[in-house]
Amino acid sequence: MSEPRTEFHNANIVSDVAEAGGCGLKNLQNGATCGLPAHHDGPCDFITPQAVPQALAEKGIDLEHGAGTPIAPTAG
Image 1: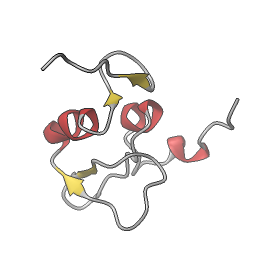
Image 2: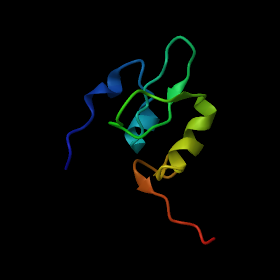
Image 3: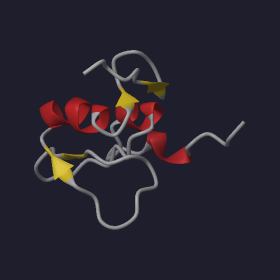
């Protein structure tokens, strides 16, 4: 089992995003949240909080069904 992420207590981390496997870093000046997976390479991609669930879903991270729940591929 991996070690828990200690930064969850930080005011600039959106905990539900981070617990699900997203970066979760929040820009305190404008409220934007990083929509990339945890421990991503390069700089954060700050987007509106409303856009985060879709951005993470596109990367296989499901915020609605619990921490790190993989999203089943859709028939298409």
